[in-house]
Amino acid sequence: MLAKNSAREARALFLGPRPWVGKKRTLHFLAWRWNFSEWVINIADPEQGPPNRAHIKKGSARKNDPGDRDTELVIHVNKGEQAEETARKLEAFMRTLRQGRGEEVVKAYIELQAILSSEAAQRTWQFLRQGGLAVGNF
Image (cartoon, rainbow, N blue to C red; front, side, top):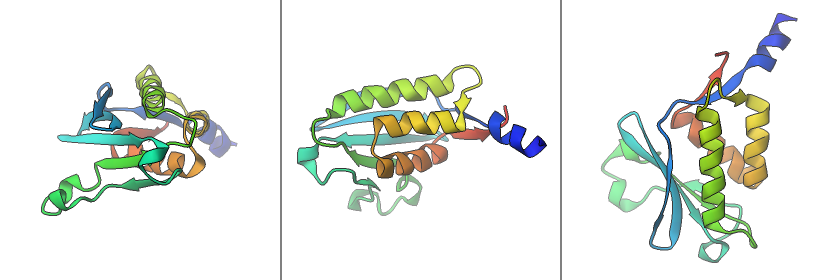
C-alpha cells in the first residue's frame, strides 16, 4: 500500500532557472542554464528536416568539449504546427514544473506528449531529466 501511495505522490519539479524562448537563424529555441552550462532545445519547422525526429546535436564545433555535447536537443515539429508556438508551449510547461511542488509525474508527461509527438516527448523528457528536471517525493 505504501508503494502505491509513494508512486502517486512522485512529482516532477524543474529545478533550473526560468527558461527563455528565442530565435536563431531559422530555428526557434528554448534555453536555460543548469550546472554551469546552457541547455537548449532547438525546434525546427517540418521543412527543415524529417518530422518527429528528436536527436542530441553533436556538431563538429563541440567535439573537443565533451561537457557540451549533451546540452542541445533538436526537435522537428509535425506538419501544420509552428516551431514558435511549440517553443512557447514548452516554456509554459517548464514554468508550470517550476512552481510550488511541481506536477505529478504521469500528469506532467501526458502534458508533454500533448505538445510533442511520442518519440520527441520521450527524448525531451530524458533531456530535461539531465538538464534540471527532478522526479521524486517532494
